[in-house]
Each structure stands twice: as C-alpha cells, then as structure tokens.
Image (tube, rainbow, N blue to C red; front, side):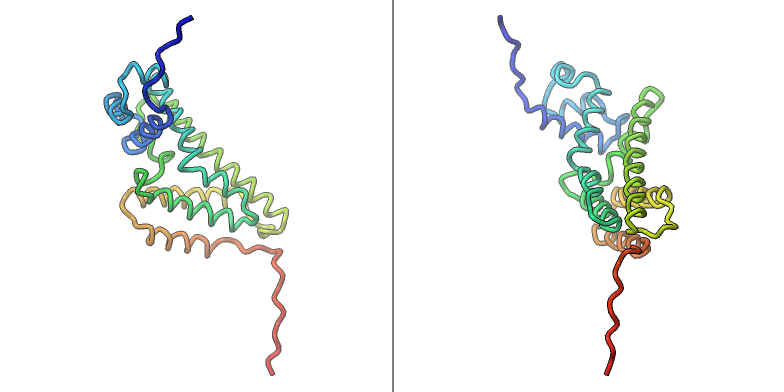
Length: 208
C-alpha cells in the first residue's frame, strides 16, 4: 500500500519559528504569509502538519510552556518559597531579554489584541496564566504549613503580587529595559518578600 509523501521540513523547527512570529506580532497581527515565510513551508504544508492558524497558535502555546517558559513549572520545585520566587523572577528576566527570543512574554503579548473571532484564544491564554498563579498559591499554602512563610501571609494575594511583578518585567523588557535594570526590580521584590518563620536564630557571640 503506498505511503504518503514524507514531509520535507522539520516540524519542531517550523513550530519554533511560528512561535516567534506569534510572539512578536500576536495572533491577530501574524498573517498566514508571515507564518509560512518564517516556517519555510507553503500553506498546504502548514494545514497538513498543524491544522489551521488557530490550531497552530495553540501548539505554539504548548511549545512556549515546555520551552522558553519551562522555568515557571520548575521553579515550584525549589525548597523554599523565596527560592521559588527568585527562580521565577530571574528566569523571567533571562527569558524576556534572551536575544534568541522576541522581547517580553508570549503569554502576555500573544493574544492581547485578539478580535472577537479569536476571543477563545485570549481566554485560553488567560486561563494558562491563571493556572500558573493557582499553582503558585498552592505552593505558598504549603510554605505556610511548613512555616517557611509567616502564618498571617495571604497566599492568594502573594501569588497575585508575584504574577504582577513577572508580567511587569515582561512589559518592561518589551519596552527596552535592560537585564541589569530588571534585576534591580527583582531585588526590590525579593527584599520585600515575607521572611521564613522556621529559620534558626544564630547564637549571639559575647564580646569580651
């Protein structure tokens, strides 16, 4: 039985290129000619491999979360709440200023200008951001139980604060802020982070 003609392009590489187009231009601004030119394929090949533009965009979201933004999930495995936030902030800065990627954050910029026809994509990206914030809240709840955060800490508000700072970092980076400038913002945020309650007090040294 004859088989179909094999694809003459690297699917993963083409998807990476499509991600960058959506990242720079957003869903609405990225045209099919923009995408096919960047991906190095024609329109029939795009449809055959990825489906329509909406399907391609959804695959780009998954690619982004597993690739450039993978620090978000891995940060939750840090042993302390402060370590989680430090890795989130510094990872966001590294990603948002990495010359290999467009400036800023794809999840913030990718669907902000979607029209009514693509409202489902805007909602999907909002859902993804909300899921990340929920995971962070749960991590802070665990930190409170472990006395790694003060008992009076509001985990939902703290998670929203951290999400706001990371999204702000992306916006600043898209506007041209340097890595050094963004690191200073991260330092301010970390300086205001609630101190752990389970740290052992250092013994006082008697002065002779």
